[in-house]
Image 1 (cartoon, rainbow, N blue to C red):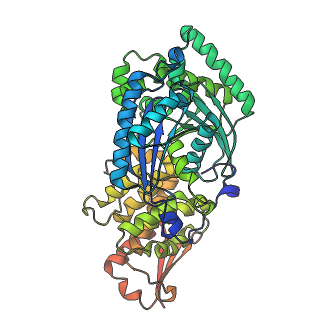
Image 2 (image 1 turned 180 degrees about the vertical axis):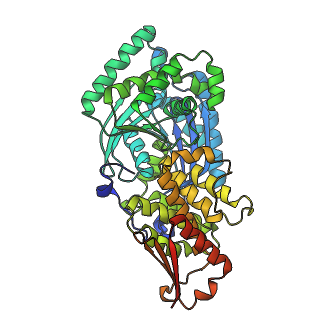
Image 3 (image 1 turned 90 degrees about the vertical axis):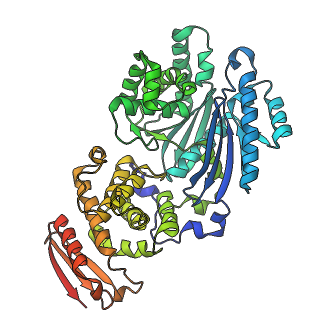
Length: 515
């Protein structure tokens, strides 16, 4: 959610009521989506805070429905058989889960195959599922909405690659703009005559045409689709990148080109596949998808490239949300839901945020947003064993399914929560991740963590006059603590030690005053 338009598009209010408490949001608390693609068939059931859902169920079968269509014009017989079996299973699962909402959509392979309508009829007869076959521009729109689920107010170009097609869509100010579809899916390209030379010329011609249709694109490029995620995994492996979270993973044009060459020069694809955790079916398409991505970034020259784990399935969930829900911050809503579900004292995170905020009074909204998220999460891991609680917090924050977080922001959040339970961050199994955060921000995270560690001992009442307040004078390096009548007895020896540790991180003198 960073970038030149951040101030204009960033809508965030830490004091709004949590969206999951709204009856309109609760109606979306469990939503099922079946995505019938050219390469895979997947069932996803979303559950939890409606604005930033958790994946209650997520299962994928690699069916390759679109394999061989370039020659036959029909769905793969073996793929069709496997897809039908998968859909029968998914329909039964949905019945047992008693899902209030279930949507099944099919994309390029089914819409282009001459036996696509017959396949849909067979599915309806044998499973009861009604399949909605969507066209290319609609597929692009839904994929773009999936990206907006995780990046409200995002701007740039969405590129969604499937087995038989590739879609582009503009997003800006929370809206989807121009859209275009092509047949640059790796299953289609694999069957193209002329070998690699003919394929390269075809890819170049189509992408230059797409670029002319879409116009200049120099903002962020969001990559959606399994083949792009596989390439991102290989990029992580090549770079020895320590945080293996695909969502919001960033690449440059240069790194994409280098990884494409790395794939071209690979002599043992099976070893590479195993090292990166990629299925055999997916890996067979990676070299062709890599050719497409290399040409795409060469032509478009985006400012940067971000991988999105959210796509058409999340777009279908977004489709069911009203604008009020769409405008909410997915990170804050997810953290609120987690506090409501797991914290010992739900609602205390908001008071803790008020308490620590004087330490960050000059921070930009994006930083205050992270401070607020940390305060909401500060107590959700209290059930973990004390010896492992700090590391559990860090692990949860850096690897959890949280939208709207860059990798460096994940590290900031994780480090702050680690320091909520531990003064020192050295000696953990996560030290290789610390380098993803600049040293000055590591210090800020430490200050935030120690402020939460201290503030959590005071259990501030809702009546601020009876509670504790901090005052930070950065130029004088003085940290003042004012204790109300109810808070003063809580300021014992351990609280004093934690206050002193916070001051030490700030390199500050302290003043304590009882009101």
